[in-house]
Amino acid sequence: MNDNFPRGTICIEDLEIGMARHLQKEITDRDIELFAEVSTDRNPVHLDDSYAQDTIFEGRIAHGMLTAGLISAVIGEQLPGHGTIYMGQSLKFMAPVRPGDVVRAEVTVLTIDYGKRRVTLDCRCTVGDMTVLKGEATVLAPSRKFD
Image (spheres, rainbow, N blue to C red):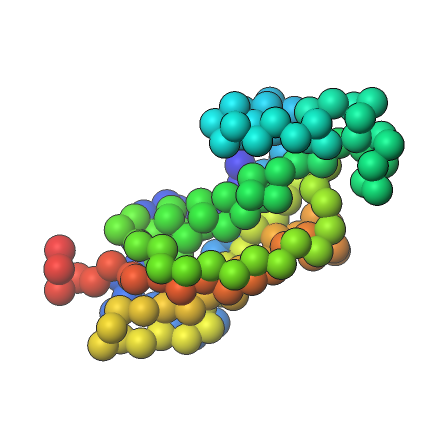
């Protein structure tokens, strides 16, 4: 995994509009198998080459929520980071992610409500130049006042 910043916490008092963080991860067969085991989503489009070949994807794809989980990793580990509470997430899946794809998950601060400690984040996953997932998250950011 390739992070652009150390893991930890950025308190709401230190957040700024436009602040961004990302990570990159290659999606492996093992990732897909483990996600299927944990989620119990064993749809053969994710796990069975011959089945998946006959679908509109013409091959196996990763679970969409596995890709979305990378957004969660950026939010929970980098921006705002440790202590962040998810309040909501919208997602639009734009293109499939395949085993071997390197996904870049990026989160950017759109709005900050300091009084309520709420932050809206633009969320995006790309494979190369192609956007595979986009959406927005609303989170409750950690604050030094409560540490």
